[in-house]
Image (cartoon, rainbow, N blue to C red; front, side, top):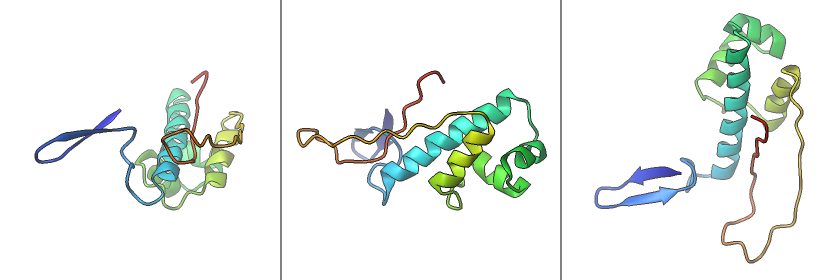
Length: 112
């Protein structure tokens, strides 16, 4: 849980993108990027090596490593995960009307 500090109070939020345009999508992309970066580090790859493996440029790998994800679509992130031998499973489910949160994109990471 992330805490956002206001001048007179602290508000608990689920993630740092709450309240921003496309906040759920931004958070999901950040989670995917974290998994990609984690795997790059675990393999001990330099950015140039990772770029070759992921079919990206070295500056793209740098952007990914530094959380600058505006140039990355979900499809592009999925392709990076595939290149790192990671299965991506997309599960669609009907949003429950009783849920107090709006429908959105959620990333679960079992086994990571």
